[in-house]
Length: 305
Image 1 (spheres, one colour):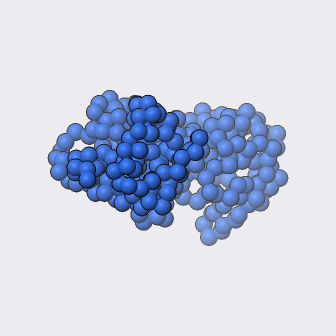
Image 2: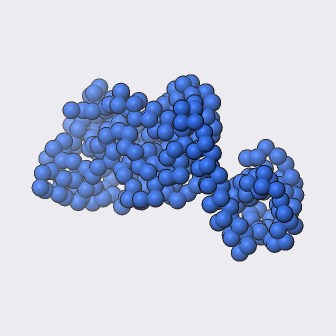
Image 3: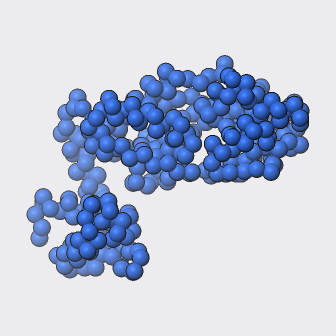
């Protein structure tokens, strides 16, 4: 039987290997050789007397014994992490690895610069920023803080609102001069609307509300993309009407390069939230980062009102 001091190390190693799904990926993450990863797994399996992983030439998969081991290992690792956070002083400086996820365009434009300033304030924190088209599943253990639009319905995570946000309809003056400005949502059907294929929302369906009125419009256009920045550039170049976050278009509305369309109609709420697992609610690095984001966004509000 292994000593208590080695068991958590083995569990963390196996949890990492199972998450990454290959010996080579685990070797890169641990900064060791692939044969060293294989040797360590073989030693674990020999000690336990059970095969934990099925090996193929490119991937690994969990055996039934491996799934059982992983389930308990992750629970124990969380408990150890919680214990260490409780023991650590509440006033200790934030330190350690912080894994952040954000969407491509918003993460590149707004989150990345804030992280640059955050690590200057807290030099003992190491940040890994992952930019993805769609946010990861809330049950995914591959991130510590996820920045997303809209409050998630999942009660298993903590959602901290860090900034208000609206999605606005806008187009370039050149486009509106050529095609006219829609006077009501129904007229959007006669316009080129630039589509953004992101998240779980139905593509090409725009929901609008004004007072007690609400309308759902199926929009069409010649251009669509899964990248919001690309769609924004197309709108600036006069290709159609775009629905985009206020944070992304405010400077162009101020400069006149874009104009609001149907400004008396509102879209569904799209406030910006920092999402993190309940087990990390006492983690100093997480609390400091979420608090920093809230302060930074409050100081740079893009409000058009």
